[in-house]
Image (cartoon, rainbow, N blue to C red):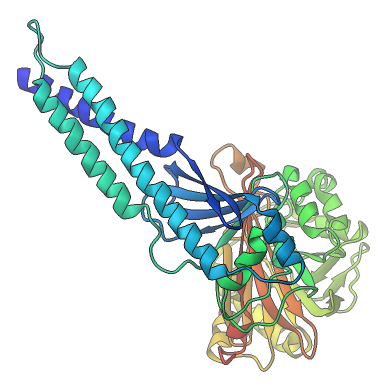
Length: 488
C-alpha cells in the first residue's frame, strides 16, 4: 500500500509537469516584426497537426500538413508595413526570399522562447506538486528529491518531444482553405484570382503580405481560373432545410446540380418543405434518388427545377422533353435512381440488393446512347454507375466526360484520362435524423471548367461546413492535367 501511494504521488507529479508544459504551449503566443509587417505566432494543442496561415483582414486562411505533434502552429498576419504596401502598389517588388527568411527566423525564435518557457512552467508546476505530496509528519509520500527529479525528467522529455514533433517537416503543399464565419469560405472567391507559377509560394507571398489574400503552394503551368464558368454540385439533403441557406450562398448566380435524395421519402409534406431548392441555382438541376419519389420530381419540375431522367427532362404533367439539356454551357443528361419511390406504393423503400447488377446493365445501355452527345451525366448512386466507370477507366472516352453522383454521404473525386467522377458529399449532413446522432459535416463541391475550344473540367473545390459553428473549409484540386492523361 505504501509503494502504491508513492507511485500514485509520482504519477501525479509527472502529470503536473506535463500539464505545465502543455499549458505554456497553449497560453503563450508572440508577435514578431518583419520588414514588411507583423505576424503573431501561437500553438493550439489537441488538434490534428497542421501549420495554419491566417489573414484576419479577409477572414480566411490556409492549413498545411507537416506537423507531427497533435497541435496547430498558427501564424497570423497582424499588420502590414505601409511603405511596403505602397512599394507594391507602385509596381515595385519585395524581396520575397528575404521575407521568407525573416518569417522562418521569427517562428524559430518564438519556438525557442516557447520551449524554454514550457521547460520552466513544467518544472515549476511539477515541483510544486512534488513539494505538496512529499512525505512528512507521518504522511507516506516520495522524498522531495525524488519528486523533483521526476518533475524535471518528465518536463525535459515532454519538451524534447515537442521540439522534435512541432516544427513543420517536409514540403509545404496541398492546403485546405478555411474561414471562421458562417458563410462559405471567402477563400473560394479569392481562389478564383490565383495564378499558379513556377516559383509558387515565393511569387505569391508578396500579395499575401499586403492584404491581397493570395497564396499558391503548388507549382504548375495550368491555365488561370479567374473568370471561368463554375457550377455547384450537391446531394443528399434529406429534408435538412437548415442547410438550404448555406447551399443558397454557394450557388448564388451559378448552376446547381443536385444528384438526388432531396428528401427522405418524397411525400407531399416533404415536398412542400424542400421545393424552394428549385430556385437556389441558375438553374437548379435535379436527378431523383432512392429517397425521392415520382410525385416529388413532378413538384420540383413545376416549381422551376430542371428535372433530368433517362427518358428526358421531366415536366410537371409527367411528360418528357429532350434527354440532353444545356446547363452552364455544358451538355447534360441525368439518370433517375432505379429505386425511386412511388406515390402509388405509399412511398415505400424499393431498394433491393439483388437488383443492383440489373440496374448497372440498364445504366450501361443508356450511357451508350447518350455518351457522344453529353459532357456531364448525373446519377444518384455510384454503384449504379460502377460498371460504366470501370469500363471508361480501362478505355477512356474520346472526349472529357464528367459523372456527378451522390448517395454515399462522403465526398469523392477521381480524375482519369477524359473521365472525372465527382461526389460532393451530403449537403444535409446526413439528414435531420442524423444530426442528433453524430456530427457530420455539410459537404458540396464547386466545379470550374472551360467551354472553349472544347469543354474541359479545370478544378474542383471540395467544401466542408461544420453544421454547429458554420465554419468552413475548402480544398482545391486541379484536374485538367489528369483528364488530359497527365501529358500537360
